[in-house]
Image (cartoon, rainbow, N blue to C red; front, side, top):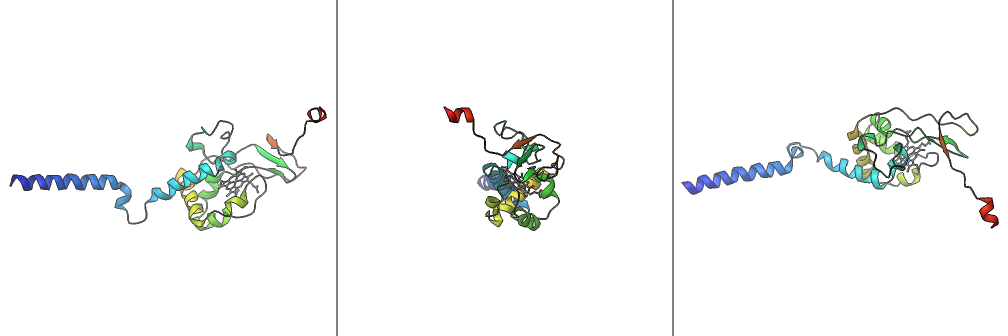
Length: 171
Ligand code: HEC
């Protein structure tokens, strides 16, 4: 009698621990929602998306809080292509379905966007990036609009033109 009561108690505790370890995702019927989000966070981090799409991320050694990630940059990138701005991906992904995002992310872009790298990412990875960005929610303002070469630029910008120091070269 005593023994079986103990066994029942052990089973109850065991079940509770098992359910606890499964977390809220275990209760749902679809795939674990957090798996894609985690993978997306990893891909965004190692893929360097924040380097341009998060204001100050590069300069501050990647310490920008995640709440500000991918909200775009108000500083332009100027070169022979004109002046481009790294978009607010939170707003861009926020207005798209998953399949729209996958197609959109693979389109050709102006420099310095490494679209040719993003283009070869697998569907699964691009979907994970989407899941992560969507998990952050929409925030911030749209980045300034593209300015054609020679046009008036109203913001600070980085100039992407190779420089050579004449004095140093003459030494
Ligand atoms: C070196 C800077 C840089 C890096 C790194 C970078 N981007 Fe961009 N990205 C840009 C710029 C600048 C634009 C705007 C290009 C244009 O106007 O054609 C852009 C545009 C985009 C767009 C189009 C958004 C829109 O406005 O519709 C997407 C999607 C995008 N980037 C995704 C990514 C992802 C995902 C990563 C990481 C894997 C990434 N970018 C890394 C600079 C960068």
